[in-house]
Image (cartoon, rainbow, N blue to C red; front, top):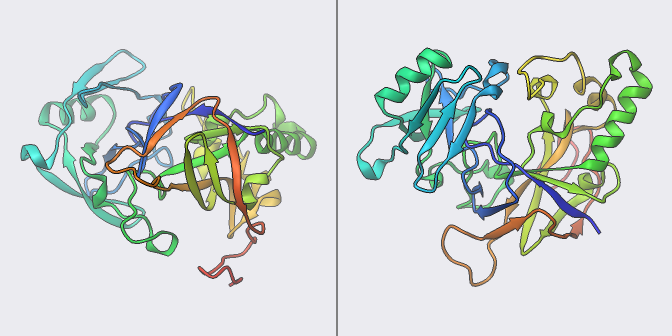
Amino acid sequence: MPLLTGLHVYPVKSTYRLSPASARVEPWGLAGDRRWMLVDAAGRFVSQREQPALGQLRTLPAEDGTLTLSTPDGARIEVPPPSAARHDPLADVEVWGAGFQAAEADGKTQAWIAENVGDFRLVHLDDPRRRPVDPDWSEPGQSVSMADGFPLLLTTTASLARLNELIAAEHPEDAGEDLPMTRFRPNLVVDGTQAWEEDTWRRIRVGELTFRVVKPCGRCVVTTTDQETGERRGREPLRTLAKHNRLLKKASFGQNLIPERPEGVTGDVLGTLRVGDAVTVLETGPRWPAGSVDRSGSDL
């Protein structure tokens, strides 16, 4: 039986991961996942796509919402969580062209960011209901944190093993050490499946919760970045994914999920996931095509 073998939370978008043994699930993702992000002067999100070293910034959230940031050279700051409820200023920000408002961190924090990270500002999504999921792939009222597009991302160890086999067979000059799962920055890692099996899933149960499997995750240059050093590492895995797992016109790895609200559950906490939870496939469908599709599933 497939099992959940990894949980990962990224408190600040594009920074270093936390890997807890359990995590609460909220309608917009794992609790604390990507509720903060860095933006440029225009309010556009900043990620490892432009700033690969951003992944070296460590984060540690506290129960009261305070976020501790630290750099590899030892600089450190504690950031109180800003919010509209406390009359902190809201900034107009955007992720992939979708605009919403997020609360600005205090002046001391912004000065620390400028000195230790770059010419950016830190913002906090105090109310995730402000950012709806893309309506082409969601239902009214569904929202997301400051992740790229969807509340959660799932990957499988079998697909990673197959990907590494393909790289070694076709590009031995680039093989070296196997690519680690950290390159793909998932929230959920599942073991015990067939390679690429997740590309046929449409609805799953993990532990006590169910999820709708929305669409494949198109990958970008972040997957070529060593998450331990912040350095780019060549053309893999994008070259091999583009050849062997091209879905919806993109080199793909993993599936985006939207959690479903259990019957009778109210409030922001839908349930809890734990490493070791069983994963059950409830519904399947055809493998996603290489080209794009409309919402009815027709090829375009």
